[in-house]
Image (tube, rainbow, N blue to C red):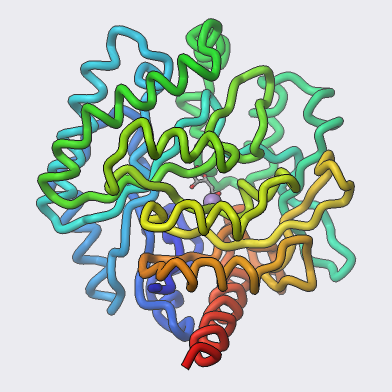
Length: 357
Ligand code: CS2
Ligand code: MN
């Protein structure tokens, strides 16, 4: 595996490439052109500049997270053909620049959803948290406003104000989109892009839904072993793979993470490894814990061992971190806690590896 960290780009991220370079064992970044809206074509010059910037800092551009999918593709609207063509152009340009990994998600309207961005923990750190009762008590509009109000001025992943300004229209677009339709639209899209992926060896890695159940009545389909395997079979090409995000799949305590990893051998192209703490057995309330197993509900050793056992050799990144030591950063994406996470995951991997010799 290759240990990486996510970086949002200069002007968007509070963390610098120079800081990431100094985290022991981190050799690459997972990055994106953060200002791009879903559906926009990426320019070759912007892609090559991004790559050059990362490499000048002594790091490797390990993959793009994300090239986001336009809602017309997700809903199967007639304009999807234009947006699929745009997506193919972007993939073509990424492929020409040597990019071989692209993460994306297929969640309707909202990306990940939390009801709190800075819940205070007993050690004084703050973290993102979810409470189903709190979610049920508000409407999507209020949710968008509170998310953006708590984001300390940072534009958060998947919560672009430009797009969410049209919330009512977005919800109307998804009115008749049930799980089956969404699945059909996803496979339609994947089949169309597979030729360009084949041409350049681009590994597509779908990010699971977070949380792993419908929110605000919008369906969610990438949320358990069965559904993910169904997608792997529907487009049975090794380039159609997944981002194994433990914090997203792990929101559902019934998801057996090591079992899911074993079942996806050969199809995991990127791993997001982070811990969660369930504050109730049915995950009605959970918070994002430190990466350490002992701080949360997930067994991080078992997760890393399962990745090791399938011979995973792609990029891993710590995922959301807490805000610690007074750091001012985008919620979930400060330097300190994620750097601790990277060191811990590297330590687990070293121990597992040495135990095998
Ligand atoms: C999130 C997502 O859990 C995560 O990694 O921060 O926003 C994720 O980057 C996207 O869903 C991937 O498209
Ligand atoms: Mn993730």
